[in-house]
Amino acid sequence: MANMKIVVTGAAGFIGSHLSERLKGLGHDVIGIDSFNTYYTPELKKLNAKDLEDKGISIEKRDLVSDDVSDVLQEADAIFHLAAQPGISATTPFEHYLNNNFIATNNLIEAARSAGTKKFINIATSSIYGAHATEDETTAPKPTSNYGVTKLAAEQLVLSYFRDKGFPAASARLFSVYAVFGLW
View 1 (cartoon, rainbow, N blue to C red):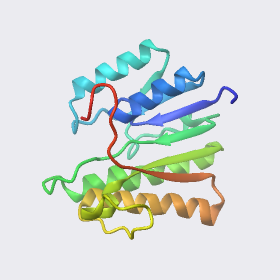
View 2 (cartoon, helix red, strand yellow; view 1 turned 60 degrees about the vertical axis):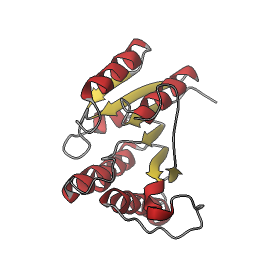
View 3 (spheres, one colour; view 1 turned 180 degrees about the vertical axis):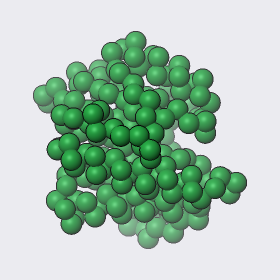
View 4 (cartoon, rainbow, N blue to C red; view 1 turned 135 degrees about the vertical axis):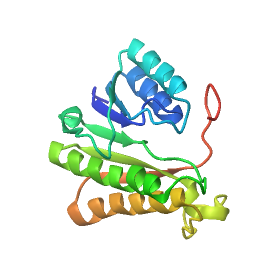
């Protein structure tokens, strides 16, 4: 596989930091984007970002809802979109989920199309299945949280870009993810 320029959103998070490090280890040029929101401990995310930067991965502090990221996406061969408002808390306002899961995905995929990105990989979630997250991908989604609802909407948005606009995009639904340093 040829050396590629790959952008990872949510790069300072648990999955994003591991993915960024692995892609760099495979010889790719990796640029991370993260908003460093406060859902997870910001200090931990900053430590992750510092560790990635020490390994030659640049990290851009950007909010996918309000910041222009087109400069970061220029000449990107692929984007792994992991940035999201996670969690199933009923106390988190719906607007946070809508903005950070759906609007952010729309903004990013539009910028990726404009930049001529060759591959867009959206990372979805088992939360779209609601209480039946132990089923397989043939099970109909029945999200029971704002997180699941907005991640399903984002997944369908990505599918529509592939189906209706021919944009090379796909989603991968992750279930329980673990690695060094455990679950967050």
